[in-house]
Image (cartoon, rainbow, N blue to C red; front, side, top):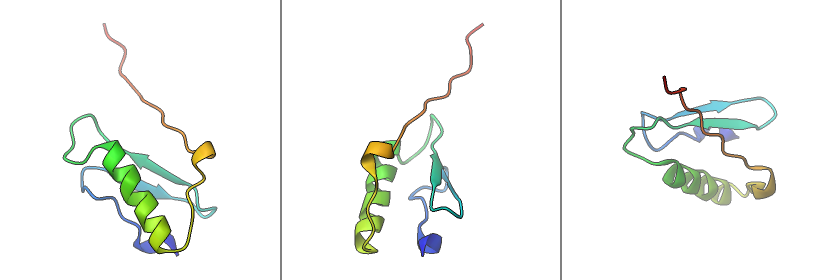
Length: 67
């Protein structure tokens, strides 16, 4: 069912797993921010009679160590 879920920006990536777990990666410099991508995913879920389990939704920020 989630095969038609795509990120709003081609700069962002959406990885799909068989257990309906998704990983969205958004680079630092992109035309669509993570907040807008997340709103897009929630809207897609609503249109497809699904819910986003917000208490289990996590954000992780990766940074390169400064030298």
